[in-house]
Length: 353
Image (cartoon, rainbow, N blue to C red; front, side, top):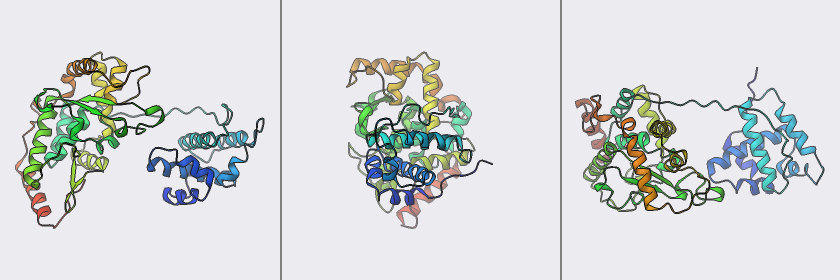
C-alpha cells in the first residue's frame, strides 16, 4: 500500500537544511517563506533516501560526464512507497537545488509522467447567494464579492490597498484595480518582473465594498488613509487582515457551499471565456504573465479590458436575481453582528479572520 510520506515536519526540516551551505544557497532563492519550508522538507526527504546531507548530495554531480546524481534521481522516481504527487514535487525541488548550485542535471534525469488532477468549483447563482449570506459582517461580504468577481489570488488579498483602485473609482460603474508585481505570485522577481494584474469589480461588488468601508469607519471610528489595506482584522486594535483562506473556508462551511478563493479565479476566467474574451486579456485580468507584452499597460488597453469584463457581467453578478440583495440581512444576522461588535469594543473577544 502506498502510504510513506515525510518523516520530518516543515519547520524541523528547515532548521536541518539551514546547517548546510548548499541548501541555504538554494532556499534563499525561493520567493516566500512558505516555499522555502516546503522545499526544505522535500530536500530532507530526498537526502534521507540518498543517505547523505545536501552538501554531499551536490558532490554526486562533480563534473561533466558524471551521472551518479542522475541515476540516483531515476531511482527515486521508480520508488513505489511514495505517492506520485510527492515524487513529482520532490524531483522538481531537487533539480532546482542542483541548478541553483551550478550543477545542472541531464534533462532526462527523473523524468516522469504525472497528470495533476485539477478540480474546479463553478457555482450557480443560488450557491453564490448562499455563500454571500453566510458572511456575518459587511467586511466578509466584501471579501466574498471580491473573491467571486476579481480573480485576485489568496496571497494577493493581503497586499490589496485602496491605492490600487483607480483614481475616483467610486464614480466608475466598473472600477479598475491594478495590482503591482510585488503583490502577485513571484513578487516581481525573475520571470515575474513587471507582471501586473489589471482587474475590475462589478457594480454589485462596488456597492458592497463601499458599504463595508462606511460600516468599518462608523463601527470602529476609523479614518481610512489612501494607502491602507482594504481589509482589516480587529485584534485589540486595527491591523491588516492576513488569513483570507481561513475566513472563506469558515463562510463556505456555514453555507454548505464548497468554495475557495482559487475557485473564484476559475469562476471569473470561465465567465470571460464564455463571452469570447481573448486568452491574453484573461491572463492580464488574472495577473498572469503574457508573452511579448509591453509594460506598463496603457490606458486604452485598460479600457478594452474593461469592455471585455463588462460583457461578462451577466455571469458575474447575482445579488439582483431575487435570491439576495446587497443590503439584505436577516434579524438573526443583525443580532450576530451586533454581539460581535459589542464584544470587540468591550475587549471580551478578538474579531479575527
